[in-house]
Image (cartoon, rainbow, N blue to C red; front, side, top):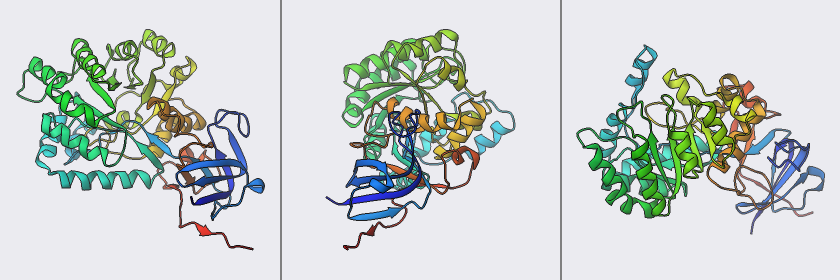
Length: 394
C-alpha cells in the first residue's frame, strides 16, 4: 500500500463533531490527514502525523470532505439554452421541455453519451465533487433507459432508474406506467441501485400519487431503494409518499406544508434541496432554515440537467443555499457533504475520518467560509492538487 500525508492544513473540516472544536463540522486547525490508497487511516494535528511514503503540503489552506452530489441527470445530449432564455423572459416551467432532451438523447450513440458524461464528471471533480448520483430518464424506452444506466455505471455506483421521469409524447399514460413497472424495470433494475419518480400533479407530463405509488411499489419489489422528486412545482403528495415508502431522500421540496415538514422531521427521509433549479427557473426557494429548525436532515445537490439547472457546481449550490435558503456557511457545507451522503445512505463519504474514502477537497483559501464568501470563484479542487512529493529517507 502507498501512503500519503496531507499536512499543514490551516482548517480541516471533518464533519465529526467529536473531533477538533466539537462543532458539527468538527474543525481542526494546523491538521494533517494520512491516506493509504483510497482510504483515510489517520486524522490529527500536523505535529503528530505518522510517517508516510508521500507528502502534500496544504500550506495553510482549508481542506473539506469532497462534495457529494446526490442528484444529477448527466446522461443526456443537446441543450435547452433557448428554453432558459424564454424562462428569463417570463415563460413558466412545467416539465414539458424534457421531451426535447429525450429526442436528442435517443439520437446520440452510446459513445457520444459516454464522452458527454465523462466531460461532465471531469467538470464536477475540478470543483471538488468526489461522489455523484446519476439518473436515467432521458430515454423513456426500454433500450434507451438501459443504455443510459450502462453509461452511468461506468462513472458511479450511485445509479438511479428514472423511467418515470415524464410520460413520453404520444404514449398512453396507463400503458407507460405498465411499461415502467414491467419490462423497463426488469431490464433496468440490475443496472441501478435506486428507483425514482417525478411525482408532480401540477405538471401534465409527470406522475400523480397513484402512478408514483405503483412505480415505487414495483421498484421496491425489484429490490431497488427509493428516491423521489417531490413538491417542486406546487404543493402535492410527494413528500408524504416518500416518507410512507421510507425513501432515502425526497428532492426539491420547494412547496412544503407544515405537515410535510413534520413528517420529514419524524422520519429518516432526507430533504435534498436543489437551489440551482430555483435560480434557473425563477421559482421561489425552499425554506431551508425552517427545515433545519424543525430537525429535518437537509442535503444539497446540483440537479445538473439541460433544462432546469445546467450547472455542475456544488460551490454555487452552497452559496445559493446561504444567500437564498437561510443556511449558514457551515450548515450549507455540511449539507453538501455529510447531508448528501446520508441521502445516499453512505457512511464512507462526506466525512474525514479513519475508514472513510480518501475523498478530500482543498480550498485556495484559509477557511470554508470562502465557499459562500467568494461565490463563483474557482477556489476548490480535489486532492491531490499536484503529484504527491516522495518523502526522502533521512
